[in-house]
Amino acid sequence: MSALNQRVFEQIADGLADRGYSVVDGFLTSTEVDQILQSDEFEKNKLHFRKAAVGKTDKQINEGIRGDYIQWIDPATASPGESAYLHRLRELIAYLNQNLFLSLKGIDLHRTVYPIGAKYQRHLDQFHHDDHRKLSVICYLNKAWKEQEGGQLRLYHTSGPLDVLPEAGTLVCFRSDQLEHEVLPAKRERYSLTGWITDRSY
Ligand code: OGA
Ligand code: MN
Image 1 (cartoon, protein in one colour):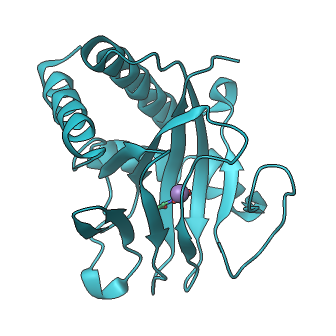
Image 2: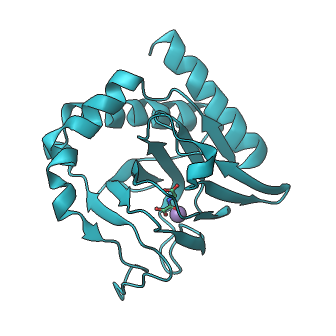
């Protein structure tokens, strides 16, 4: 593991242990972000992203709750940039297991597009009858995002709400069972890789 990764992983582990969340910028470099966005998997497939459903079993689509479009990533067919990201997340898992004594195993990951005006109402990421999602990890892909463009991720922490701008390379990681959050509508399309670190390995 590189010294740089080591430092970033440490920052994430400290945040999770102290507050249940962590926000780090530069988790992906600008070049890696370009590589992900410009790949056929992202660029050309965008048309085939599906409207995200609400809930695990009923697959209900409810725009009032969430308006994003997603496509699940199969690691076997991920683009080179996405594979590099998955590799870094696996290193993060190893680091967190060792340092926070967790038993994290798998990663579920999807490409995400929020059209202009789309939102995701306040929610928790863990399902009612399925507690395998342990950590939510979101990496944003939007260069030079401005505050007035909206699209903040609002984390409802016990110490008060915290807004995160979806700036390219920024990684947000938080406990899926604890932290309620919402996505505010944006004036610009909003791209990300959204994932969950689970305690199962399929
Ligand atoms: C989610 C989610 C937050 C974001 O997909 O469950 O809360 O900032 N995403 O995209
Ligand atoms: Mn969520």
